[in-house]
Length: 529
Image (spheres, rainbow, N blue to C red):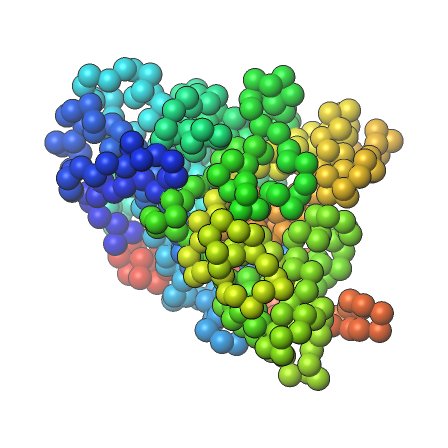
């Protein structure tokens, strides 16, 4: 927080196909006292908010490392990955060099949102509708950041004004969730179903926050409130199911213009990065403005193309992942090593490889812009990429509805139907694996697992990565114990492999949260426990 500027720099929005909105104006630094005095200031302030959102997500260490608590993903045992390893080994220190970025970036987004929420209503010569829409979007992004904070650190300071308060009160987890829900309700009321023009619509999809996206976010927030640590249970699962059902009903009625792509491989493809019809909310990047640093993160250090080796798949999760097109699109089918030969991931070159693990294939891009990543090529992807960061997808809403309604004690035909929509695409055939004969518990667990497989290895700003599912279900401790035992797994006939990175120690619930950054505890005495 100590680095958050009191004034906002009115930057340029990093959105594609919005050239009419990207004309530079020398607004410079503005304080709330003399801003919103002309009609152009409203658009400029919203522009600045989205610029802060996009910038806060553009580099891998800004996005989030607590996703490594999940059972789908792990990191390198050496190299320069210590900030990542601490999360993966459940022993995060208060001086973790990447964690401070995660903390700081969330408060920057809140600061930019507060600037609009508290001041936009005095903008002259614009319609009330335009002001309501802008304020609603700001409420969403404040809720989004508070949600990240409360699921990562638990009790945190909450500031609802554009201020730096080193004595800011630390709010309880329940108080923070109450604020999140209040913000989301305002966003739900004020955001439109769809936008009609740039920069908020790029001709194919909504670029800015829409009503369907807010409803979906509310569904998942209610699921988290139903689970650990608040444990509000059935009532909140029912709220989550109701809100997800609103999205599904409107999609089926064509009131909301979203649909599942037919082929799961298209979900993260370059072809659909600007026009993905199942993406309710994304963060979009212009090819020449603040692209994201993710294309090389999942590629192993010893691959021919020279990845960063930040993350890779956990073996048990890969083993249990159902075979089919979804699994084939989630992991690289082969890896190209320095010998210019394509190998199965479990090839260990006589025991000389530092990391032998499945490799995710969701963020990589071709060295040639506009082309899909080719795992057989020796051409390295660029350091910076322009794939859209996916925040909420329709398939997730299907899984959330099925799980929430089942955990509320009800097995519905809609839950079975939407789960089969997700699974049939994953299988590449009409298998209709799920049925009304299943119990509520079986449907809930099936939905929980389907969501995990849908999102496996995708964590760059996603609203609900696997680790967050495990957090709300209080299952992180189970995985901690599994990682300690680290058994050998048969990954191919006669081939046994286990995780390279060890986990030690004893579990306690403090491991569910990150510690406050040391630099901030020196400024705010309220952060010292």
